[in-house]
Amino acid sequence: MRRDEMKRVLIPVIALTICFTAIWKWTLGFSAFTVFSYTLQKAGELPRSFPDLAMISQDDTVFHLKDKRKYVLLNFVYLNCPYVCHKVNNQLERIYHLFDSTKVPSRLEFVTVSFDLGNDDVEKIKKYREYFGPDIPGWTFALPYHTDQKSFDQFLRQIGIWKYTVPGTGIINHSLFLYLISPENKIVQVFDPARENDHSVYEQINLCLQKQSI
Figure (cartoon, rainbow, N blue to C red):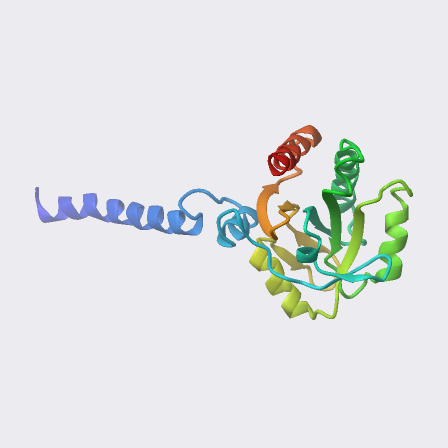
């Protein structure tokens, strides 16, 4: 093969190899094709430890998830969200009511944490919780406690949540994952409410509860 012919063959092959390698690296081996899944996978394989963060509830009580010593289903929202956060919480409410009183709140709690440190406060999350009615023992709405935005954003990256505040709008784009945290303070499962239905999430959590009781 002549040199000019070899160049015509090698150049596209080399370019294709470079593109293939770059895509493989950026998608973590073709396993993460969105910024949400990429951030989640970069946080590490399951099960993994849940980083500590002080939180304050709608009842003005400071707590740490690691001190609960039970399963916790955790999600993140912000109250000025125009749509999707409230949709996820409505789904969580349906999942909540699939469990009976022998499991919630004695062995499983729900915790919903606000992203919006600048606009949400204890009074607002208390009022928001009231929209779901009084019959929800074991579902806490909370805020990070004595945590600045930089530290909170680092915490979110550690657990695999992507978040971006659109400048000048107050809109926060973010992951929607639900995290199941074990009594040993480890993230054992992550659910995507956009892809999993209520009963699927319920059954997987219930299986963890059943294994614990064996």
